[in-house]
Image (cartoon, rainbow, N blue to C red; front, side, top):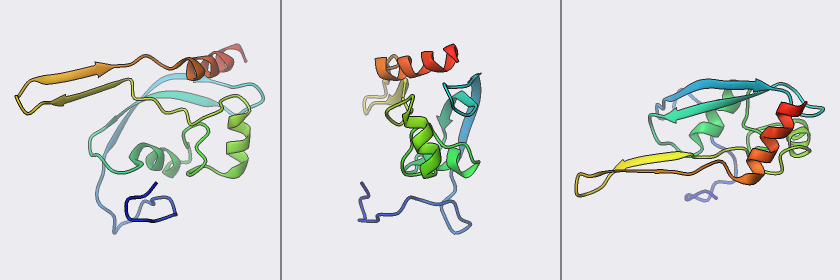
Length: 122
């Protein structure tokens, strides 16, 4: 879905708006019959459309099962053990209009937790 009707994915370019993504490696693993995979914690400093997906793909490490920013071969390999894009916002915080800071946390959904277990077993 693109608000301006575009069909193609976003792309990094010198003419684009600046954006900043911070990453922290949490775990390395290997899914069944797959390539090495890393679990990372990502903090976006700027908020751009598909920022996480674009930045990880730009450094040749697309998010797992990302049909828009990974190659068809990588996607095919990924969906064999993880049926959907492995991207989860576990925490979001914002300052409400009243000035009160609100934070919500959500544990990893069962389907993604099961996919992670497959990588540990391999």
